[in-house]
Length: 319
Image 1 (cartoon, one colour):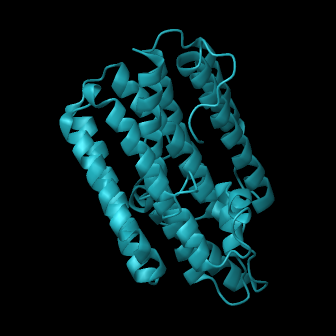
Image 2 (image 1 turned 180 degrees about the horizontal axis):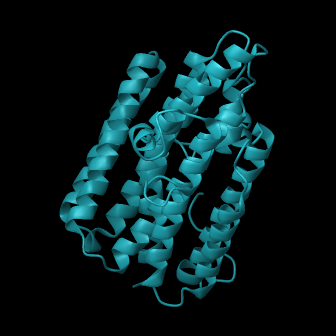
């Protein structure tokens, strides 16, 4: 397979996952804000920092109010990580590799693009319309992955899409968890306890993990138990450990995978060695930064080995 085709498939998987998880990220943060008591604090600018987009936003906006931030994250075509840009980029990547994809995949991705293009302005009409639009993105993107899973051979093309999807998913899972580390809790211990409970329930719901957490961990939602579950549960498909296993599985069927595989194993060992009981927010934030750095290193190794192997200096697509 040509390196250009491989890169387009990988990024198609990443961009689709980014669009869905940005929608989940916004919904999670909105729910946290709705549930906060008056003496707890969390600003929209914190969301930008957690997402790693604060510098990009500041270059074009003076104030991080809710409307400008929603426009930036959902419909701003100049922001390469907005939902609209991500879907647009996924659509373009899919268009160039249509010959290796089931025909219906292109049609579904194009339909998703038309949906977000037409409905993105509704995110500024209030939280109700915004939630409807974001759930629409999540549902349509899930149908694309369902179609891929049910109609595509497990060949190299499929493994590249799957690898991109899981790398992006693991990264966004850490960012959704990280939202809670940025909340300044109220001084009253009883209110702080209720606020923390609500935040972690919102995190589980944002990742569609609440029911599985209750089934496999317990009915009582505690922060350290949620963090341990979302980082290290080997069975739920949005945990970091599960995503690393999927990336390793995809790499194992690709040629010359040793450099990237070493990065995956390093990330795996670091994750296993983290002490997650009784974590303070600052330490949790540091741990999540480490995971994100490991995921970036995996991406770098994959890009160097399969996309830019014969290029001395290439930045690839937007990250």
